Image 1 (cartoon, one colour):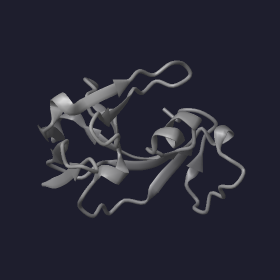
Image 2 (cartoon, rainbow, N blue to C red; image 1 turned 180 degrees about the vertical axis):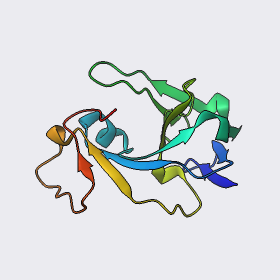
Image 3 (cartoon, rainbow, N blue to C red; image 1 turned 90 degrees about the vertical axis):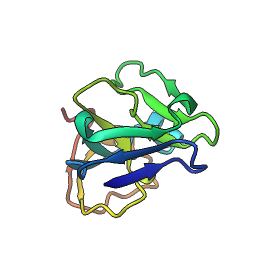
Image 4 (cartoon, one colour; image 1 turned 60 degrees about the vertical axis):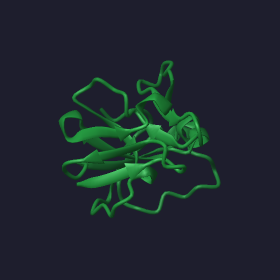
Length: 130
């Protein structure tokens, strides 16, 4: 089992298998909520074990397609943990255990701040890659 949680520990979740991919989003929205590194999980491997009632949602508006969930107690960005999709992004910073993944892509590089230099060879996209 791979465990995850928010900063205060009110929200906890587990994954029965490792996420399939890691990506970095450079959109202004993800940067501001502190969730730029995202792992993509399958819904059938993800389970909230504590604090579902502590999760609040910031609804996406175009051109963004993913809502952003966060802990209503400490504000930790969680990704889209309340999604009903077959797979969805979870904020990588919430994973408590080691992940053996390398960054696969950068999205919304058109919104990347000038002070950030992308230092890996991952594919880059101006918007959503999928």
